[in-house]
Amino acid sequence: MGMEELSRAREQELHDLRLELKRQIASTSSGTPRHTALVQQLEALDRDNNAAQDRWFRDLTREYPLHES
Image (tube, rainbow, N blue to C red; front, side, top):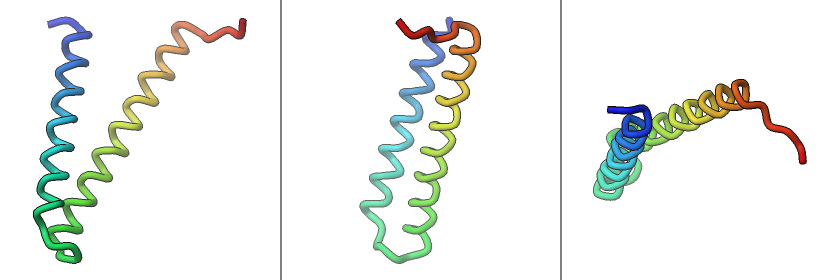
């Protein structure tokens, strides 16, 4: 499996996990410890994903610097 396939598989896995967390959040009473924990998990997943995307972009621009035209 190439890097592109791995990237797509990871994106799909994250997408599925986010959907499952959102489904669980929607079906859990607001204000309960479980609801709070699920919301925190979703927020942490989003932060981790954003950080990974930032690292990927920094690595890319380090290897291929952007130039103004």
